[in-house]
Image (cartoon, rainbow, N blue to C red; front, side, top):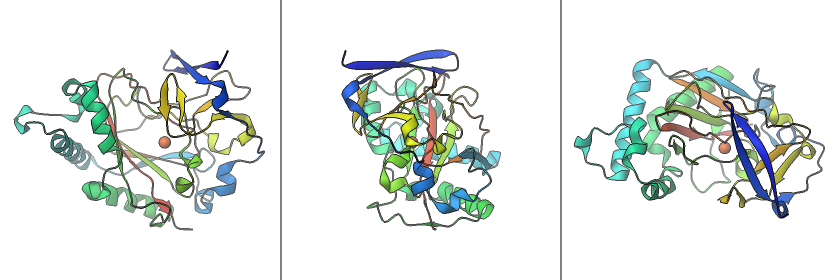
Length: 273
Ligand SMILES: [Fe+2]
């Protein structure tokens, strides 16, 4: 058999994950990458042990305005007739699979200037609350912002992963701001404390490997050794709140169990040490 499979449980639904055996990397480092390569500033924060925190950023009025801004940008990108009363929540009803595949190529590298107001407010609140400063990431040609769109019941999600495996993100903090979708069942699954797992406790693939026939740029975390399941938690995030987490925290597999399209803005500012 060339393939190995495992089960992943989320909201009582079991998913089967299948990868090619030859894609597994043999890792025997007895240290955690977050401890070795992560931002030293993050280590001093009160939430570092859990690896994530939820921060109040926008009030209701601001949050609604942000949703409107996202809808406006999508109308432009999709060239939708403005009279059509487009709402980001109902995005999945208005696009074909083909249109979605084309669109996410654009939305995963948005010029952050488009969402400057949203970004500035998030950064300001986080900078103040945690006494952090952000600086330009010299490992990147340009700063990016991602608008994630996950349609209900579709395989639009990333595999379980850590952004920190990609070197340019090692000293960053992940920011995830959900602007539509079901908050109870379908925010971003994550594994608390998993940034501290040593590499020899994880089965991970090479970059650009396939899971269930789909190729992913980021290495896939296939299994945590000695655990039957990857112990994902779906954090409850209220409208206007923002999820922040270590780039080494295991997250992803954000299957959308709801009826609306989930949209979220992702930012990864580099922390000034
Ligand atoms: Fe990620």
